[in-house]
Image (cartoon, rainbow, N blue to C red):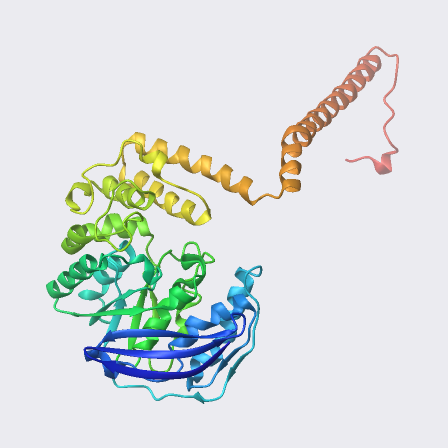
Length: 441
């Protein structure tokens, strides 16, 4: 795979940087782009940095070396090796170590800029980062100057039909106006060309591409976390990886892992009036602004709100959980399990309704068994079953028999000693002590 050239185009009220890429596996050239309103033209530069995160993982999946002809940040270029190491350790069946060649490696000067961007989708993680940084109590925390929302970043552009995203954009603008900050609305086609699994693989790399496409104007960009530090999952956006996409110009910050998602929802978003009005998490309403209240992600978000007693205050959700919420909530893997366990911990801490605690506990225990079975090969499964059905009972019987023999031997020795004492006192036998030199005094 080769990144051959980059071009900036300004047309009417839009500005776009376009990368021309030669893909060996596909035997063709493709163009990927990042597009923004014209007023952000100075933020876009014609270097390779924005395209490297977008291309590295697809090249690793295809097993193609990556050749970069336009200038690339020295810091980013050096980190491509470590990023590969992590992904190949996590997903050796999907990614291969590749060579990355760069014709023009540049050590950039630190810019004198103060813009701080944060990705914002109206979801739990992005609202938590927004809440944390919009009026930071800690002077060391940067204050957000711009929210960033990108069309075509999580889903291909084909998902957005009938301008459904306009309702989301309008609500993001309302959040920004209420807090007197700016918004960057953009569009990219990288997901149309590279349909890697979003959460598991491409999440952080795609966000990093967008952030670096704006590196001419932003000192740092915040990537809202998916998980907490408690459990570091093999996930595309991770505190182990996100910062490695940084350049000398723009620092990428993985933000929010100090708090579990359930805690973000119940303890922080319930303090934010804008989150109560606009929170959006729904899986069923792609590109739209509302929440169905009936999908697994809606239920997973509504549970902490119900536990906190604040669900009815959130305008984008129904006032109560669906009656069959336990059947809707999916726990398909370790990642889902961690989120469910965090909700259960929250429920116990808050003294939630007994029925919620019992139902969650039962759901989690059932899911643990199902996940264990999913992870076993057929041979391992047969072996585990044999251990449970045969080996463990035999081991227990063996332990019982061994203890029984010990008790019987002790009883036999005690009986013999008692008999000899009786004979001695009856004058029938003399106890045979060892010689006096060996006897304890």
